[in-house]
Amino acid sequence: MKVLLSAYACEPGKGSEPGMGWNWAVEIARLGHEVHILTRINNVAAIERSLPEVPGLKLYVHGYDLPIWARFWKKGLRGVQLYYLLWQWGAYRRARVLHKNLHFDLAHHITFAVYRYPSLTSRLGIPFIFGPIGGGEYTPPMLLRSAPWRARVSEFIRWAANRIASIDPLVRDTFRRATLILCKTPETFAAVPIWAREKCIYIQDVATNSNLLAESPSVGSETARFLFAGNLLHMKGIHLILRALKIVRSEIPDATLTIVGDGRDRIWLQNLARQLGVDEAVEWRGQLPRQEVIGLYASYTAFVFPSLHDSGGTVVMEALSQGLPVVCLDLAGPGAILPEDCGIKIPAHCRSEEQVAASLAGAMKKLACDSVLRRDLAENALAAARRQTWEAIVSHAYDEVQKTLAVR
Image (cartoon, rainbow, N blue to C red; front, top):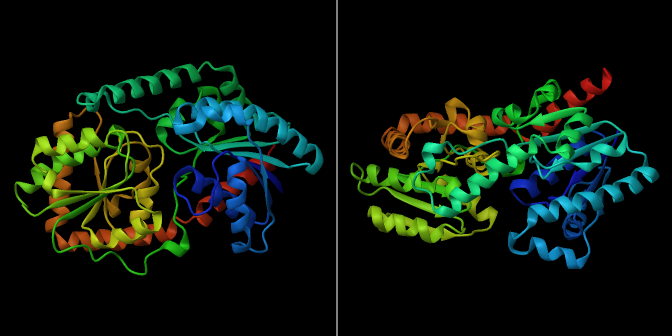
């Protein structure tokens, strides 16, 4: 098939959405399809530099961006969502021209992977695949009680946007035109209109690159050393780790936490660490290159990632790929990604921050004190990561695509 892949975010060597866009493009091409990536102009050079690294594939890139005056909106993430929606209109016009000249068999929207954002490539008059999409997840209300006001406002805006999306004619039109809808999480499936759910299947969007897999499970650390990596935002649940660390240190005084990343809630979190009396046990590493972060996993007891509503969870899969057990909440993407035998999932619905933090602390202490459990989880983690490759995910998804097209 000749596939048009709408990938606003698409960049080789990156994590999160840019990495997802690129990895899906490569693996679809490896299945023997001709893939044309429609992305932002500033991604084109990086993609073209990486094409020689995947020789023999029918992989092409087409750039589109809004006029320079309109790019003001995405600077500093001030209005990236508005910019993205405007980009969709221009990209659709570019897609129509490409389709007229190249005659695509399939349109596939891959990024941004948020169900409440419409995709206008659904209007090309050819089979259309939407996703994997997420965005239907919420922070449980009881876990918002200590949140900074900005986090509360952000969560309200997210809730309101999801409610509006349910009646947005463009979003509903995207679902109506979709041939197949790929959902990342049960929460997103539940957010899809009932009449469109028969088109939905579950597909994870987080996988491992085979060349980044560790050769053997993590040996961990003789001391209790825990690692977090991600944006320093309330929704990542770092405040829960800090509260858990205080409990852990009451029994394991030398327990430490390393935090990799940066974000707008850094000062709030550092102040909280001081209030809890654990600031000396926390190392703030700031933003680090992805390869450096991957190199850190092997020297820690466990990776702790209590995100409150992530649709994905790239870092969870990165930790598994290095054979490191994971502690997360049984919510959204991380809860769906983490196999039961690769770590510990903490129940979070209808529970207070104190209860969740206590459960996190219990899991951290258990992993720190039980070397046999830690070794078993580490071996399972690496085995799971070896199965959950981009090749496996995309191949499964396109088997479903072919089945769906065959009965049209």
